[in-house]
Length: 202
Image (cartoon, rainbow, N blue to C red; front, top):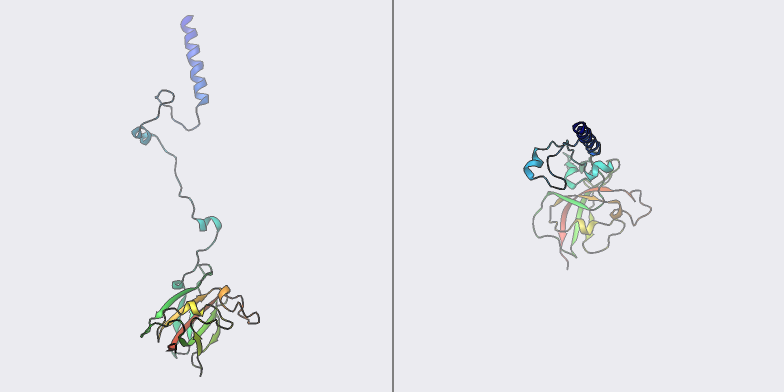
């Protein structure tokens, strides 16, 4: 009877330990409080892991467009540019530039006056809003001076040379933000500008 009592006691202890063990955890031969060695950890089965989603995936947002994402092709008649606005990335919020053609001669410096031909395209609809190519006049911009109505020229034209053709993405805060009556006020713009001439500061 004593042996039977011992057997019942051992069985009860084993059942209590099994009830306290966490689910899906293999029994261990280690004494309580002992840490498994690295080789013992490697031998234990592991649950499947999944890479955490990126910030954009978590927020459901698109990556921000770069200047390289915007395509510009000069028309065969040389009267402006055809601009393609990407749809798979988000509208930029800072000024972006990319040279389509580098130009030659010295770089424009502060105080120099640049004569430009340009095509302006609205980001929201991809339509040409203004185009000076093929017309009789060009736009004159003096670097370092405040530009009436259109911000962003000073920063966008830094380092330009004569003949430079530059694609410029102008965020809405740097476009016609000062000119409340302009229909392009509050619109992100894509500008393709060609530096026709540079007049050095006198």
